Length: 507
Image 1 (cartoon, rainbow, N blue to C red):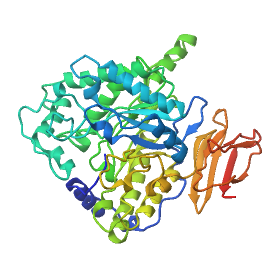
Image 2 (image 1 turned 180 degrees about the vertical axis):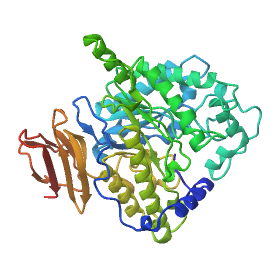
Image 3 (image 1 turned 45 degrees about the vertical axis):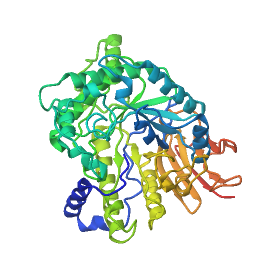
Image 4 (image 1 turned 90 degrees about the vertical axis):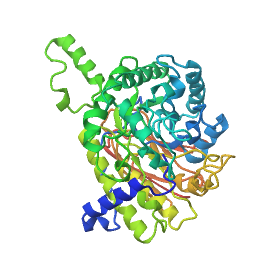
C-alpha cells in the first residue's frame, strides 16, 4: 500500500530504528553486492532463475468492482516500455465470496480474461489477495478486502482517519481483525472460510500457464496482537493451512507469504515461522513407495527443501521518505538506515525460512521532491544486489490524483519521469544462479554460475531509452542473439564454462 504521508506508526518505527542501530550503519555506503548469495531463486519451467520486475495492478482494483482500470493495450505498453515480466494482480475476497461458501465465478472469469492479456505478453502473474483496513465494511469510506458477512465489529465505532493508515487503530477495525484471527475465541469459522476461498481460487487458475503464484494476504495486520504474539503463533500456522489447501488442487504454483506490515515494511525484523510445502512430503512418500528405504515426514522441519515453492514476499516503504526534505540531508540518512536494516533483516529471514526473496511492493517519492530519482535508483540497485526483483506500487495513472509523477506510465502508455528510471536493463531469466547484477552510466553487467540443470538461454531485457541502437555486447559465451522487437538479448551457456558474464554498453 502507498505511503502518501508519514504515519504515527512510521514515526515510532523510525525512533526505534535510530535508537537500535549502531552509528556505523548510518554511513551512506551500501552493503556488498554479494549479500544476496545463499538465497534461493524463483525458477521457471526450464529451471532458470527468474528476476521479476513489474507493477502492482492496481490500486484502482481496490474499489467496488474488484477489477483494475487497465485494457489490453496498457499491458502491451507495460511490456514494451518497462520490460515487465511479472504483475502482482490485485484481487479482493469480497468479490470472490460475496456470501459464505458462495463464490462469484463470473468475477473470477473477468480476472482470467485480464490474466490472458498478460499471458499474451509473456508476463507472469502473481494473484494478490489484497486487504487494507480489513475491508470496506469495517469502516465506512475506508478499506478493501473482506466481505461484509466476514466483518464482525461487535458494534464498535469507526471514523476514517487522515492519514488513512491511522484508521487501523479505530475500535471497529481492531475488533474486525481480532475476530478474523480468532483472538476473541468466538469466530474460528472466518479463517476457515478464507482457507476454503483460496482453495477455490487455486483450483480455478491451477492450469493457467500465466499464473506464477499466489500471494496469500496483503500486509497482514494482527489487530491487538502484533510482532511475536502474531507472526509466529497466529500468522504462520494460518499460512500453513492455506498452503496445504492449495496443494490439494495445485502442486506447481509458487506461494508468496508476507510478514506483518507494521514495522517490517520500514526495516524491522520478522518473527514469521517457516511454512512447509507439501510438495516435499509427496516426493518423499513417492520415494518410500519405490524402495521402502525412506520414511516420509521424518524431520521435515529440519530439511533444506529444494522443491519448496514458498517465497518471502516482503514490502519496503521507508517512512523516512515522507518526513521531509526528499532524499537529502537527515531524511536521506534516515532512509539509508532503513535500507540497511531492511536489507539485512529480510535476507536473514529468507535464509532462515529457506525461501527466495521478492520485494512485492515498493514505491517512489514524487519527482518534485529533491533526490527523488536518486532514491528510486538506490532501491533499484539494492534489488539488483540481492537479485530479488520487485513489484512497483502501482500502475495507476488515474488513481494518483494530481500527483501523477508516481505513475510509471501515462494514460497513453508512455514513460513518465519515474518510468524512465524504472526502465532499466535486467536479466528476465538466468540459466543458472545469478551472482551479480549491476547497472550504472549505461553499463549493465550480469554474472551467473551454471550447473543447476537449467535449460534454455539467459534472457536480458535492454530498454530503448538506454540502448537506442544495437547494444554493444561483451560476453564470455559465444552463442547469443538479439531480438530488437522484444528488446531481449539471449545468451546460451558454453558447456565448457561454469561462470558466465555479460556486459552491455550503448553502441
